[in-house]
Amino acid sequence: MLWLEADRMASLRIEEKTFKTEREVVKEERRMRVENQPYGRLQEIIADKAFTVHPYKHPVIGSMQDLESASIDDVRDFFRTYYVPNNATAVLVGDFDSKEALALVSQYLGRVPKSDKPVPRDIPKEPPQTKERRLTLEESWPLPAVVVAYHITYDGNPDSYPLHIASKILSDGQSSRIYRKLVYEKGIALAAFGGGNIIEDPNLFFAVAIVQPGHTPEEATNALITELDRLRGEPVSAAELQQAKNQFARDYILGRESDQNKAEVLGHAAVIHNDMKTADGEFDIFQNLTQADVQRVARTYFTPENRLVLTILPKANGPAPEGSR
Image (cartoon, rainbow, N blue to C red; front, side, top):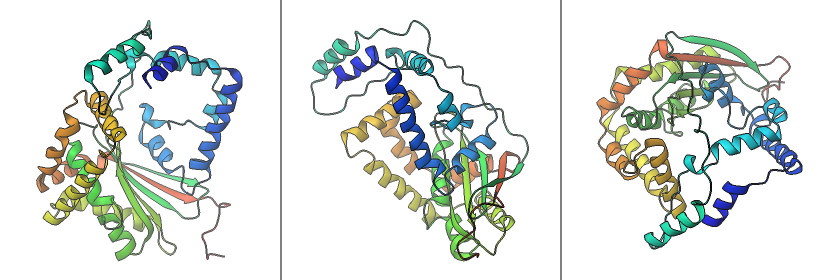
């Protein structure tokens, strides 16, 4: 495996025929995962409207226009810039002799030349949002969707841990506050979900409702905001907090079952946190969180001036909801 990775990093051959074939594969992947899925563009729309300068504004896979305009030279330049030893982290997990493993790493990866220029790190910082933003859009969707989103912090920030817990309480599954309130109790949403995108740079917490026929986007928006404000106004219950901690513990254990899982967790800690100890240390951090911690981050981030509200209406010539004809 080390030999294969070293060979790929040192001498990857990108030919015109292969490039064109793979570009069509990626286009088809986009059609399958985004274009042809109901509400498939939702995440892209949220990011596009929430960010102004940060690259999170743009989807990783790119738009169809991006894919069509990309040249083979663009791909080669990207590879030479980022797929280099001075931008790589090797994580080895398993039953092996460490000295022998390090010798093999040096033997195979040590021969790959470093880049002759620094890896670009000039990522623009998203400016703080200072007032609520409300936008209305149209998409070819069968039912209206509403989104309430807030800018939040980055992975590894002390606030990120209670934000994870808040996300589970608010929007993790059909027992979450948002789903119970909008779908089961009020019946104003066909579906309700959300989550916190807690990654390398500050990202978003968002809550979404697909509006039930017979109800209005305004009803759904107000219900979402009410639930988010409730988290600011009153502490979560001890039972809710413990359930969220139990869910985290389950995910923590299942996410470390295989060697590949362990390698991914260690790689994340090394690259994103710049601290391998967080791979294990985060368990205690989560288990020691309090109701006051969750309320504090809700009060910090779920504020009106930090809020984006999107109302996405079906286009006039879009598909009609089932049973409406």
